[in-house]
Image (cartoon, rainbow, N blue to C red):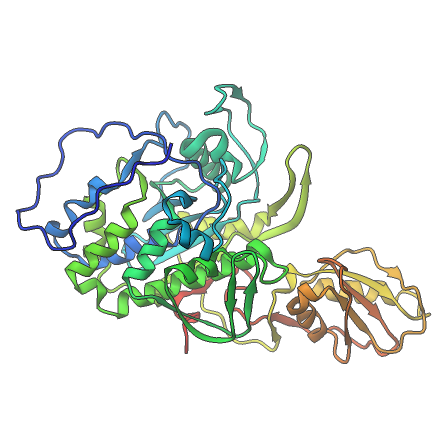
Length: 491
């Protein structure tokens, strides 16, 4: 059942002295509304960052009462070994029923919540409190649950394959934590769950967040419509920005990158605008966030204050963001559907860094690769030989694959073998991917084919000479996909 709305709080500072901390355990919280999609948990990280003001207990004392408690660690055994620093699992829920009808129409928030999460993040705060590392876990990641009891039916299940977001539907926060720990071998210290109503309020309270885009962003499903350039987004438009999944063919992976960029911009706004030094503004922001947070019993006012005292010098350059490297997209699992299978070796590099409390990636140096709008790993390509030259299709396919494109590895002969100029055929909905592919094929021609679908087609002509090395212009799409907060701000 949804949480009953709280009575509005007065906006003036309380005149009475701070209340003493509550004695003894809090009573169990009633079940909340079921989640639909993760608001990429931007807001909860902002709480950790905002605590860096180190503002006294008088302001923080009432915040603990705003947090609904859950117990995701009950009876957990055989957990990973604890490392240094603090690991927080951030999970997002829907909460759209708490948004007014007018705003729901304006920002296209129709529909009913479901029983699953959309995406999750592990936020690692270093032991010296000088760095935050954020690792996104895609909702469609291939996962195998530990044995558990279904929280709805009460039926006991053996471990079985699922998409990662389904773990919440079957076993709530506890199974979610157990599944993530099993996949990553990273011990989770705290669990935080937010909905996107607090996101909108938080962005509005800080006065909006500035983002920059080199290309127009348009998504008819969320209503996002941003021309290229610099924009200051208030809560509603910020929500559209981080929700959009149909801006290009990259879908969820592209959305996660935008969410990470937004988090970096939010950190910059919080640490550079003086908000952290204004007790009343700080109070308003934390109340906006914590009004819809669920957390484990061990994460409360004391933890916020400890982080605040330790993180006074936190800045965008102290934060780094990445998504678990994907080794195989469209990995079909019987009874589950199409999943994303992690690249085991690269993923282990990321999680080992968390376990050892190390930065996710060293600073990158410039290379000779041409920068393109979309990561080649996200572009599916079918190669056809449009000439009479035997083996040309295999050669082009291998060269594109070596550059990072997701080729089918099954080149075919084109309908015509008299093609002189190499052609990149594409569905207009994937035009940014097509431009990225064409950049790797010097001299090639673009041909729009409405209805072709997500797979692009290369028809190799007699002019083919080589495949040029390309990389995504987004600095967060390198070998391990790590980007620092100061690399994605507006310059």
